Length: 118
Length: 107
Image (cartoon, rainbow over all chains, first blue to last red; front, side):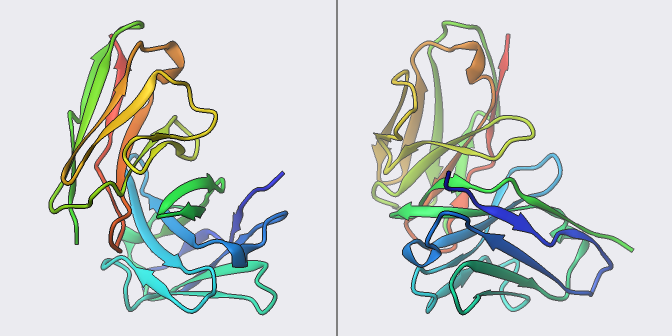
C-alpha cells in the first residue's frame, strides 16, 4: 500500500534547527511533486513548501522562506525539510503529501509534531 | 500571495440538510481550486479537485463548482460522517494557500 511516513519531529528550542524526513515506501518519489503542509494545534492548514518531481525546483511559503530548505537523498527515496532558526510559531504538525498533478494533494502522511519552546 | 476566504467559518446543520460552503480567491485562479475534508486527529482527505472534479471514492453527494474567484462546495444530503472541517486550497500559484476552514457541526 502506498503511503508517506514523516519522522524527525520533536521538542526544540527557539533558534535551533531540526530536519524532518518523508519516506515513501511503495512510491517512486521522483514521479511526483511533494508538498509539506503544517497545522498548528487547533488551527487550520498552512502550505509550507513544494519540491518538484525532478528535484530541481523548490517553492516556499513566505513565513519559512530563507529558513527552511527542501532536499532529497541521492536515491530519491526520502525527502527532507531542513528547518533552521525555528520560532515558536513554527510549532505544528507537519505533513508531507503527494501532488497528483495540477497542485492537488491526494495522499498525506500521518504527520510529525514539531514543538518549538524554551 | 493569493488569499483564500471561506465562509462561513462554522456551520450547524442536520442530517439530510443541503449545505453549501463558499471560497473566494483574492485574484483569479481559473479552476485551480481543491476541497479537502479533515476529521479530528486525521490528515486531510481530498474531495474535489480542479473546482468540480470528484476524487475517486468520494460520495456523489459532494460537488464543487465555480471558476475565476468564486467557488462552492455543496453537500446535497448531509450524512453523520460528513461532520468535519472543510478547507479550500488554490493550486494556481505558489505559495499554494488554504482557506481558514469551515467547521461543520451537528445541529
